[in-house]
Length: 61
Image (cartoon, rainbow, N blue to C red; front, side):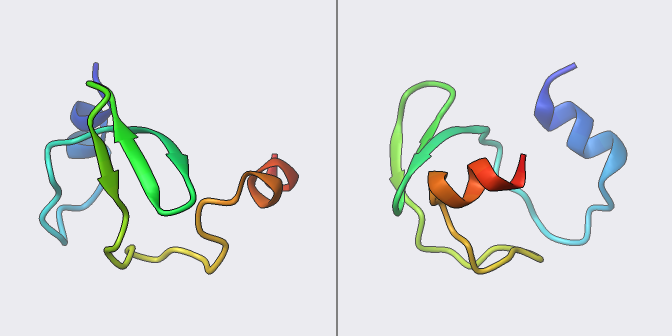
């Protein structure tokens, strides 16, 4: 089962989701499973203010 399939099964479809799985990030840039690069300039749904900062993310683990 793919991540998109799991989301469809377990997450309430309150918002429209894009058919994309982001696998990597650095600053404001994100990459999908196919290696395409995007600029992350969209507001998240229920996100915190940490953004994509590895030094912060590592402390959450």
